[in-house]
Length: 251
Length: 129
Image (cartoon, rainbow over all chains, first blue to last red; front, side, top):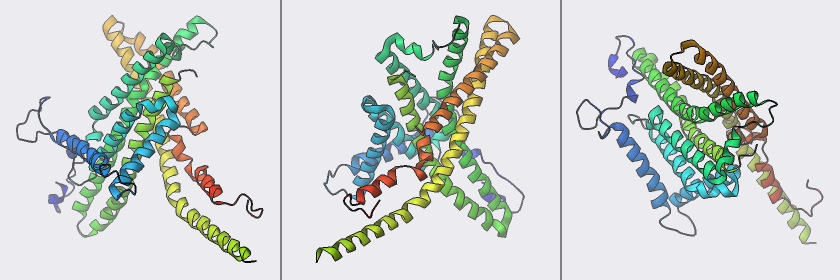
């Protein structure tokens, strides 16, 4: 894109990479259309399954490289869940593990040049965050019944009027969490990829001096790799924190 | 007599292992922590803005349904701001106690490597602390 601009000035389209388009022709995207987003999410699932299923298939006592990667990931997430949400939280480990692997692989696959970053779309992350939000709320009500609503009722406030105002604030802040949860993941991914594209555009426009933006891209790429892993970790650990709030709502 | 040099050699080896561990563990943890602190700061900003936006949205929707344009918009903007501050303060408490995401930011001076050191040491040896 920007590379073919040559000397004709800046021709940078940093947001073009986020466009969803149909894989097999056609311009309208229906809900059943196979798009590049579909393709890369399917690849994410395949890669995650490959690591876990193929990696652990050998079941050798002395693990192979693949098996030890799979075991390290498993152990890491399991420790995170039990550390944050306690022993009762371990029951929900498969869900957190699935989320972590999906986001991790989606973020890392998005770093392949020419690929599509599914997690940079707020539609994807909002669904993930909403699923967490709904399941955590349902778990809270199932475990504690109507006592779960005590989370919103500040009984230490002096008057009833004040308690009602505080309850409204608490309810809004409860809904803030999935919003910020999804905005952060999508924002981080989108910002990083857009910046990479802008630097790539500079490289196309600068001619001989292009080695400066290319060096910058190399550094950014390393940072993006760290962001990809940390954002997956953050999403998973926030899920654990919310789960902990639902399991132990007394604070 | 023959036991003494062996102990000494063992101790020297332990010291070398500890030194090697120290050089290997410190540098990556440092950069990590700095990034995570920035990420925590961004989280607080997002929560503040998200609270405000959510309040504005709710207020606008109620006004749209009830036909009372400015009243609920103003009230819920304030409530939303308060909710954003509330969420942010909860995150701040998380940082203070080093729970959740903040546990990553504290790793450089955290307890994990020190515990590993202790496991390597000989509890009967008075020279080691």
